[in-house]
Image (cartoon, rainbow, N blue to C red):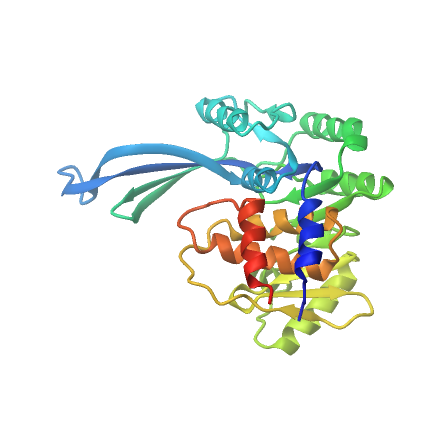
Length: 331
């Protein structure tokens, strides 16, 4: 159990600002088309959706950047966009949030990753994806890495956000981690299946239960299973900390030569789990920079993830809302 006093929370909150955090990974755009279905198409047995509203939000690594910005830090996104209308929309959203698009490179051979949801009466009818999963070119990889390297002195932490869309190649992952460690920068990772075991020697490796099961080809049923696979994974990737998210069961923290620590999820009315993982890695990273221990940072991240699950859609957490609710929770 983590016991945080109001005095300790106040100290952490006061440090939740002025950090520069690089978010490197697969930038995405989420599109929403809302409308009504009143008839079936005469061309095929499918509903006709008459669109009333259309809007766009950040997805993927971009949503992590937004979460970090809302928490009071300076989010610096690094990634790829296509040369298309979605890229124009994406950069407009970036500008509206006062984030820089300086390190968002253009690759005219691929579309901007865009996932468009068609929704009627709160029911998703279909999702339309535009994306490429091809690996980043050597030229763009070099440009992206050199941009990070030339600005590393002004960066406090790095988040690697992998959605297996090709930006985070094995060589780029290795070079970024080596650079971060040489400069004593915090580096946190939200992995996916393809590069799962390539994120070695980072500060925090944060997979979820399914990603871990898929990567090891096993099923995890009990706390003993969690403990065994957690310490095995910690040994394989040699991270300082391993944070395994367990869904409704909370989160498990692993650190070499220390017992596993499980932080249970707060009982909440869960409306939508979309974006909760992005909130967790964002809050965790900022909290570590603010001087929190790994257990304190995980507690804050777990709490923040629970708050966003009470909201419909992908909604970032703001620092004031997070700490207001944390203070109410402290006895």
